[in-house]
Image (cartoon, rainbow, N blue to C red; front, side, top):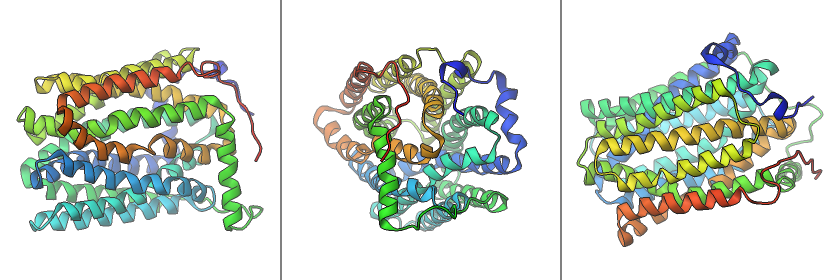
Length: 427
């Protein structure tokens, strides 16, 4: 039986509470593998940007790579959500880790032998992105099966705590060091090793999720019916579809410029090193961890949708700080604000979904969330370089932050957004 969000809106207090889910062996393995691969993802953020800008100093090349990485993920996300409700989620995640690890091994060989070209990177990251589209929904659906119901909030809080520490702090910092020691090839190799660890952890898990014998066959019609059920539920709840659409346009405005132009600013405008880029990204991790601890201690305000939208609006506005920076430490401060405020809103958003979305629809709602939210991210990557060329790098970043913040805040005033209710819609 689901409880109202307001009745249990406070997050677990203190770090010990975050560690409670680790008493489950399978969750402990999942968490270890996830944390390790997230460090690898952080390494990849720096290594990929540094390799691309070493081959081509123009932001256009990074735009193409970002487009190639994100578009296949968007394409596979919805199908990945249905698949995660049908088959062993552990095996799905294991398969995606094997594929992504193979991509990175290939990229390592190309980079270390000095034959890598931009088109190699574009082709390989497209495969990487397609595999990633299956991983997210499977992970979101697997966690509730590994921990007790009363430990779910702590499990999600632990994820929000570890993710920035690995992805934005440890990973980018290590990536900068590895590039300084052995170039991007060494960084790709270490990232490939992290997927090996993640795959090993998934292999050792005892948990198995199988198809329910009462579930209809995996036919085209049944898949379509399940997909429609998820979409009908989202369409009937303004707080869901409104937030998804708000994220779509906000991400269109600032994801591409941030991912494409921030490394360019560090390397070409401020003449920094790979280590400087790593430190800037690591500062974002510090901000996110601080936000997770604060929200974990103080809980989420009763007016949680206002809290979500205000924090996300301020986070997007802080992107403008990238365009106004004249020193690396300015970028670090802006990055800490962007990621800290984003994390605070995300914790509240994850809790809201858990409280209001029926458990049997969580996998599909999660995949729809990802799909709609990042649907225009490939276009954002594709537009970043041409827009920057037309109006300048700094103006692009400032405009992205200001316009993105305005769009985000406007969606708070959709009818019903500030007082969400659970509306169950049957297919």
